[in-house]
Amino acid sequence: MGITEKLCTFAFIPCFQRFQLFLTPKLVLLSAAKRTACSRSATRASKNITTIPQLTLQMIVGVMGPEGSYSEKAAKLWMQKYSMSGSELRYFADIEDAFLAAVQGKSDISIIPIENSIEGSVGVTLDLLLENEAEIVGEIVVRIEHCLLSKGGPEKVRVILSHPQGLAQCRHFLKKHFPDAELRSTGSTSHAARLAGEFEEMAAIASPEAAECYGLKVLLSNIQDKKENYTRFIVLKAGKKL
Image (cartoon, rainbow, N blue to C red; front, top):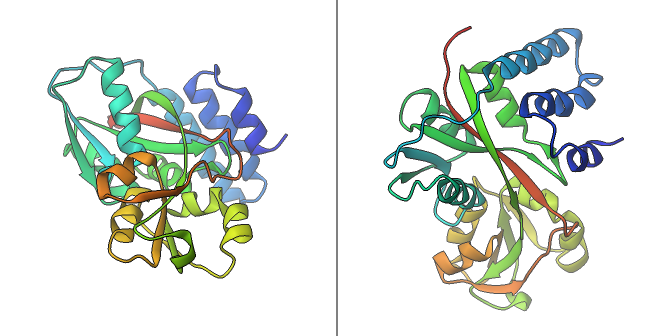
């Protein structure tokens, strides 16, 4: 069973067991030392899983920005679920900065993508869990609806921007409909949308919310290669050394 199939079948498996599951398929490709390190990471993560942190109405929630990102959407859903309307969203440049914000006390919690139903695990998040003391205190799954956004029409598009995961999740669409376009990676899908607002020749793969944030037209909706596209986000806070 491939990683994508596994992601679709363990929605009700406890979080620490899922962490071990999505590491397992990759272990055969790694050296013995790396396999040991990954196993230790999974074990530490399982020990660091807690239930729900003590929530307050004025928590600082770190996310990957800028506005209009899927991380922001996950955070808003989490805040709505726990009636945290008074909390503040704080935006960071990338996954690493958002993760370390929680570890270093710049945010009370941070909400970080860890796996996607099409592309599998988010490597940088796994590395950060291995390298830092952090407690996973919750999770939320967000449906991903990628759209092609631009100021101009599709016939003008010469450059397409997105986060590497966004580009990867739409690779067949891009090859079929924009084979000659230059593909550029950005720190987040919302960053791509903000940049695409500068020139009509640029387009971004991002969310419908990003189109609203940056005044872009939705040229095409649901362009991901598989319509059932979900990303799991973990909620984490600074941990204690074991």
